[in-house]
Image 1 (cartoon, one colour):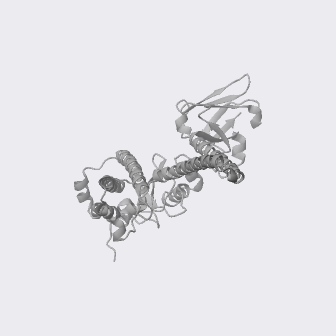
Image 2 (image 1 turned 90 degrees about the horizontal axis):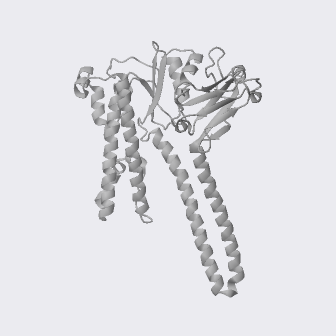
Image 3 (image 1 turned 180 degrees about the horizontal axis):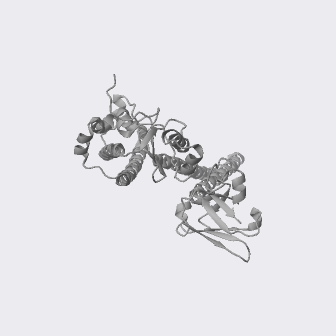
Length: 406
C-alpha cells in the first residue's frame, strides 16, 4: 500500500505540489525528490524559512527567465556544433539532452561526444554545452523546489491541452464556481503560453479577495512555452535564410550560364533557355523571401483587434449584460489590424457602429490600463473617438476586443 502523505485528495490530474511533483520528478531532480519526501520541519530546515506566495512567485519568475536565457544559449551552441559536422557525423538535438525517457546511452550523449572529440575548438564547445546543460538542470531543480512551497495546484499538460480549458476545469471543479463566474475570472488573466505535453499548468483562486492566477512552468516537458515560441520563430527565420541561400545559388548559376554562352556559341540556345529558367527561379525565390520576411515582421509588430457596438456584443453573448465583462469570445474574429510600426492610433466613426455619437471606448480583457497603456479621445462635435496606443510594445502581437458605447 502507498504510504499516506497527509495531503488532501483531489480529482484526477489536479495535485498539490508536494504530492504529484514528488512522484513525477526523476533523474536530475533527485535532490528535490528527497526534499519532497521529508517532513515539513525537515524541509524548512533544509530550505530556510518559507517566503510569502508573492515572494515565491517573484523568485520563480526570475529563475524561469534564467532557464529561458540558458536554454537559448544552449540551443545556439547546439546549432553551431551541428553546423560544423560533416555528412554522416553525429549531431545533437536539444531534446536528447533534457528528455526524461532516455536510455543510458542517450543520457550521456554530450559526455560521449566530448570523450571522442579530438579537435580542441569543438571540445571547448562541447564542454560549454555540458556546463549549460548542468546549469539548466540546477535551475530546474531550484524551480521545482520553489513550486513545491507554493499553495497553488497544478495539472500536467497532455498533448492537445490548452490553458483556458484547464483553468475552467479547475475553477468549476476545485474552486466550486459556476461557469459564468469561472469565465469572468479566466478572461482577466494572460493565457498566451503554448503548452507542451509535460508542462505544469498552475492555478490559485483566493475566494476572500476574489482573485485568480494561472501560469505555466517547464514541468517534465523539457521545454518552456517561451522556448517553444522561440523555436517557431527560428524556424521561420531558418526558412527565410534557406530561401536567400537558394536565391544566391540561382544567381551563381545564372552567372555561370552567361559565362558559358560567351565561350560556347554552339550551346547558346540551350544556355539561354537555362538562364531564363534561372531568372524565373530567382524572381520566385526573391518573392518568397520578401513575403516570409514581411509576414514575420508584421505578425511581430501588429495589433489584432475587433471593434463592435457594446449593445451588439451583449446581444451576441460576447459581453455580460450587467458589468459588460467578457463572457464568450468564440464568435469573435480579430480580423482588423494596426501595424504599430506605422501608426499608434485608431479613429472610430459612430456611423460604423450604428451610433450618433461615441461616448466610451473599452479594451477587453481589462488587463490594459487606460492612461498608462492607452488613452481615449472623444469629440462632441464629430461624435468620433480616437484610441491612442501609449505603450506599443505591450500590444505587439496581441488580440484585443474594442467595445464601443454610445
